[in-house]
Length: 312
Ligand code: NAP
Image 1 (cartoon, helix red, strand yellow):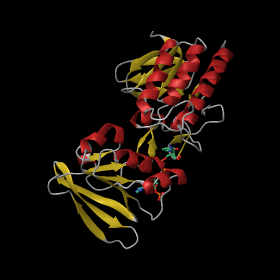
Image 2: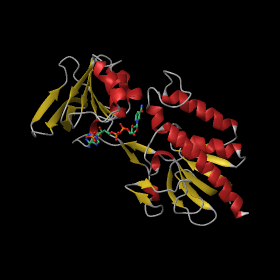
Image 3: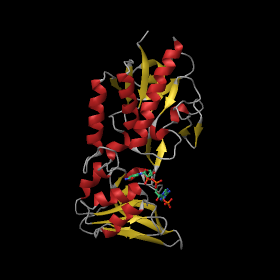
Image 4: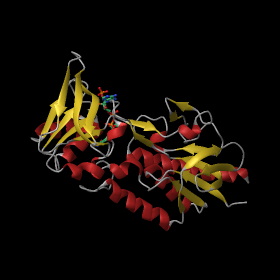
């Protein structure tokens, strides 16, 4: 029989790393399972301004690296595998991954969320060929090119400002005529001379021969459609989508209680199954930030410890 961990944390973003830190410090035998690379969405963030202790200019990857080191220091194991199915009832929980099967007394689900697609025709075909959801990863490909950003929230506006470091012009395409982003972020954006706005607009279709070279924009008020073409010399442009996130809960459907796809927990991060906790962006909550994710992770780990004690 394979090793039975005290705690398995699924997901290596801020919530998962914080849970593993607290579990490790409590001397619980802890495993962090991550699909590819720890970090989650924050690893795609160019600058973390609002996490206490992050000084100006600290990037998401840098913050995650520091968190990861801290977790290693407290003895958690890390394994890269993709979990495909779970058995959560009973005293020993079982997770079946692509590479192996993992067992634990408690599970902390910190799988986070992924970018919501823009929702236009041909979108999938152009991912990595003009369409992107990560300014930090792909911004530099569009050095001196035109860049368009879809969305009007904090993420879209902040990432659009970051992209002005690369793009000749950056245009925010927003479906309404006012931004959702915080006033302080808007103030900075409206002062940025490289940032333009296309109001009341959505992207209906993206086109191109291999590379993205044009898109159809629809006015949400009039229904009028216009075609935006790439500059003749550039032949392409960047289109970044930042219109929110989708929780990664597919494998928990019909097992954990979900609300609009997010895991329902109580204030102690407990799900509907004993010994199973959820932390971070994947759960129902009012504020999805690094600071709330790390707090969730800490609470989940402490509750996992209490649950294990109650088993003895
Ligand atoms: P968000 O606040 O949910 O904003 C999503 C944006 O996308 C909205 O402007 C929305 O338009 C637009 N949108 C949604 N669906 C769309 C669709 N199908 N087509 C076109 N546009 C669509 O998401 P977020 O900006 O990623 O922020 C998520 C959370 O993280 C928020 O709580 C935010 O405050 C927080 N956050 C904070 C910071 C910071 O404090 N520095 C940075 C990043 C994120 P409408 O406005 O018309 O609904």
